[in-house]
Image (cartoon, rainbow, N blue to C red; front, side, top):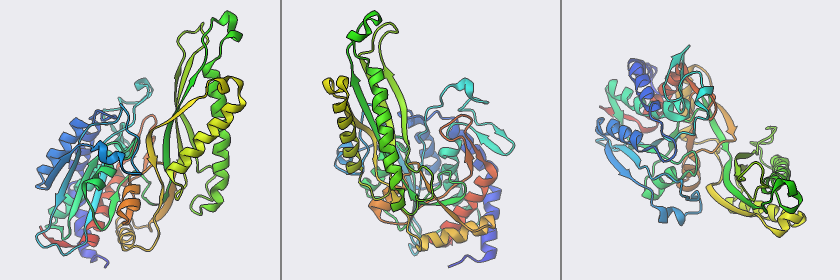
Length: 427
């Protein structure tokens, strides 16, 4: 069902009427330095915001035992966040519409050197129509858009005629366990929408992701007698060079994955962190590599993990130093599989209509090489999982920013989508 044009215009006007407040709310979110493990204050803020809107509130922490029993859970380490998950639920007076999950994450990646930023990373400066700041795009603007799209319906005199769960999660940037925990908690709906910064396009296909560590041991010695030692850092670099071969092999398989076949390099291995050694004049006895690699949809995370382990073991057997000191491989974060959003769902059709009305353009689709929490709803809830959000730049980099004009359009599209998908009743 396509919305009446007059009603659509009324709802979009309601978004415009609240947009200054929405921008201020987004800035408030950005001011929280909500890196991994430090998300509790922002979740308190979100809880108050949803409670003040009279949603039925639920607040809970990770059930590590339940996560440990689920094949799609990321590996839990000492760095895993204990911050709560917050959900506000709208329940209609008469439940006549379809239900919906609106989800967003509050955790952000580290800023890197603050002196490299044009503005302080947690001070949300607006310049030339862009809001700058760590998390402004990924994904606090989308989080605010979920909340203020529903506010716009109320401002226009309506509310959804179906149940809507507004979910605020953590651990999106490291394990995906926050979104998975909402599934384990029992939250379900007929569709899910997650407004990640996707340049106003719908994600059609999404990679899976593995995080793993490689621990290499060497033999320390004074540099005057280097040959008597075994350099763990040099050996670690030899392992990475061999893993580049595995990366190339996986990229060569893209022809079997139609959504990725046109991508020049869909599978990326990232050496994200390296630490080791004790002294510049000592041959290093240890080195730890923290890595991330992506997987095609349909590839089981366990199968990919075993292939990585086998590759490293086979290479180590050919290297005299590593053969004597085999490296240890462990998986310490994402253990997530990818998904494909098959075309033709009623939810996608409703979003396409909403996007066209809000932007004047047809809805495009894309694949992404990043992890997305939408995989939880696609793979385990088995519902249409729509990942669609505003134009951004610099996510996970320096001077991250989100285009506020795009945020306005996306908020309108979400409001129209909710109205069409859930139906409306008097507010």
